[in-house]
Image 1 (cartoon, helix red, strand yellow):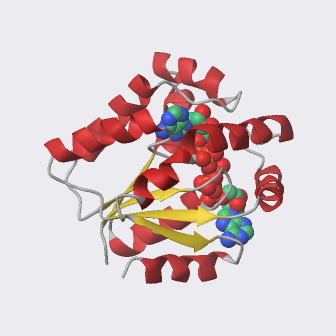
Image 2: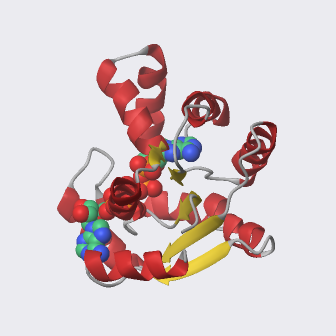
Length: 182
Ligand code: AP5
């Protein structure tokens, strides 16, 4: 199985759910920039205070903050890793490429979890995180379309993209992902 991975997909697609399962079963490092940022918010750090305002609007936190968090984690030793929620725009993708080149750990596959908007909104409203109200969810979807979705072509043109339908139960989606990575 491929072991240096990236998950792409709109908010609510199931990136975090599927990433946790795959990493637990394969002993990979699960690196979620959303979780890292939420830990900073919870700890009340200066970085967390800055990030919280941006996250509660559904906008993207600055590349500088996110990159510092990722670099620290990626250099830890692990059997493999999975980036969930990062990169989020082309500039983060380029910074990631130079970091991975420096540490000689190229990406082996990018999994896109594809799903339609109405299912996403329903799932997120049912979850109810601080940024899961209808207005903020719609903005997160808009930010995804404008800033993150261009990464689909970026990774497709590099021959790394695997697209998986996310509109089924958790176990079914997990097995679709596993198959795409063999
Ligand atoms: P982040 O935490 O990355 O959130 P997101 O991308 O909006 O994704 P979600 O966590 O909402 O969805 P998911 O796809 O992980 O789905 P999940 O598995 O949770 O980012 C939050 C914010 O942080 C951003 O808006 C931004 O401000 C900031 N940020 C993060 N990274 C950044 C970066 N790199 N640069 C700048 N800013 C950054 O599932 C959702 C729900 O659906 C759950 O309740 C789950 O139980 C349920 N579910 C999952 N799969 C299924 C299924 N198959 N069937 C039914 N229900 C399911």
